[in-house]
Image: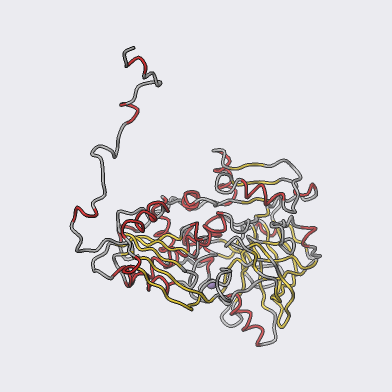
Length: 468
Ligand code: MN
């Protein structure tokens, strides 16, 4: 951020346990009865309470000492609060952290390693749920997969869906991004890639894992910046990967070279299944965890899943657009567009035609963006009804529509052909030459800041005001 007025002030990001206390204190954490089933039942309850209450499940299956937690940051306001910033500073706070990372601090002793299992049996030692009807089985969905570049030793953090394929085997989907890049480097040398999966981290660290930054930028340093101090990390017991010292659970292992096994189907963020195919394989060497650990699961397509992806993307897209278009004030990846596909842009338009340039810039900012709506400053782009109103009253399809065919999109959008599809942009801004009254939004004087309590009577006794 160049604008020093908007340099965010944080009151400090919360630890996972402090955040749960905060939610519990005001009735936003639902604690289930003991023993709910790991297969479907936990996900069903978490999904039912999605966005209203986080959930805590003691003694899953009646057998596991480790509780399951879900829905921890399934609200934009919660996310801001957990990071210690007002909601309208959430994006600028994240932009600032991504641009000013803080190196981590290595410690010798860590809560994450209080208990160590070297004889690994994933499903016996951890309460790993199965979510959807056609999921191939139990999945780790909220694990930060941390790997190290075989060349530079710089770490990468990302969340990948992890299918439990055996006692110490995990099938993992690696999209062609950074973990995959490091794995290819190792594979070319015929070596496995050392890695770890951290489960149950604080909200700031969780959010930082979704930052859209270049390869060889350790997302744990963004977590440090979100906290305003270096993140404590500890070296794994069986390899050189550094993991958050306060993580509830850590799975240490290796991404194997030249091995692929069947993975999927699995219920993904667009509310459809990601297909079954031959995918990468992790062999697990150790599990470490806190005494009294908790297992975090993210239900696919729920608000927690959508918001974790959307907020860091919004911050990145906003920075990219503002580089070319200083009039861009805010962006929003709408939940109806699964937090990925529909981008709403708020523009202080200075030039006619600028809306279309912003649309083209947005398509270039991230290939997942499919539909863009550009609105004026008076439109609240966080309210889908306001955006629809702008489209219905300021947009003409023969004049304001941009369509680009056969472009790269999201492979998880089933209406594309292998991820290739159309882009559409709607410029819903008012022409600069329009006479003022033509687009003057109606307003009742005194409507804003009305003190209804002072103006209304008690009860609804209308009859005493009329005769007869
Ligand atoms: Mn990365």
